[in-house]
Image 1 (cartoon, rainbow, N blue to C red):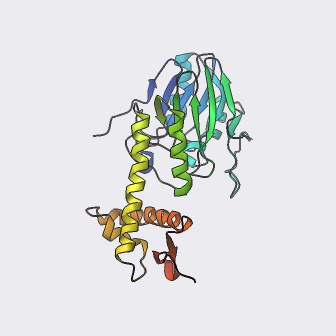
Image 2 (image 1 turned 60 degrees about the horizontal axis):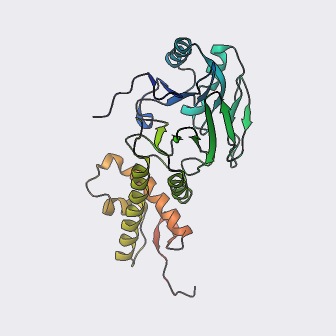
Image 3 (image 1 turned 30 degrees about the vertical axis):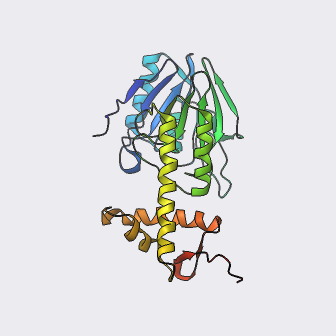
Length: 287
C-alpha cells in the first residue's frame, strides 16, 4: 500500500512539501509543491492545478505557520498540474510573483493571467536565503522539463521526470534516456519528486528506470526479429510482450510501445511501414 503523504511536511532544514490537494490518476496523491530556503522569503516550486481552493488555503496557512512569504515561483514544466495554480497563488496573495520556466519550442506556453513568465536558460541559478537551485534541462516527459539541484545538500527536485513509487509518462523516449543518464551524473543524495513520496536511493531508482526501458526495448526488438516476415502494429507487440498485463491498460502499453518503436526508428533498427505498422530494418538491403 502506498505511503500516505501528509499535506504539510518539513522535509529538511531547507525544504517544506505542500500537497497540491489534487489527487487522482497520474497525479497520485496530488502534485508535490515545495517551499525552498531558510529566510523570510522562499522559492515555491510548482503550484498544482488551477484554482484548487483547498491548496490555496493550505499554502496560505503554511506560510503563516512558518511566518514566511513567497520570493518567486519556479515551474518544472508546462503541464496544468504544475503551472496551473500560478494565477491562483498570485490572486490569493495579491502579488504578481516572478514565475520562471524553460520556454517551450514546439508551441506557445500556457498563458498566465496574473503575471508573466520569466524564461530561463539551462544551468540558470536561483538563489534565496539558505538555498541555491541550479536548473538542469531534462526533456523526455515534456520538451521544456527541468529538474532543480539544491546545491547545499544534493537534493534533486525531479518534477515528473522521476516519480515516487511509479514510473512516469514520456513524450520522447530518446531524449528521456539521455536525461536519465544525465541525472545519474548529478549524484543526487535525495529526490523530491513532482508526485509521490521522497526517494532516498536516487541512483538505484534512476538505474531501475534505465534498465526497465532497456529491457522493454530488447523484448520489442526480439519480437520483431522472431516475426520478421510481416509488419506489426504497436498493439500486436503489446499482446506478445506485455504478458499478464490486464487488457484495460493495453492502450497505455501500446502508447509506450510506440515510443520505443519511434526510438528504434531513429536508431535505424525498426522502420514504420503503412497503416502504422512496424518491422525490423533489413540490414544489407540496397533499397
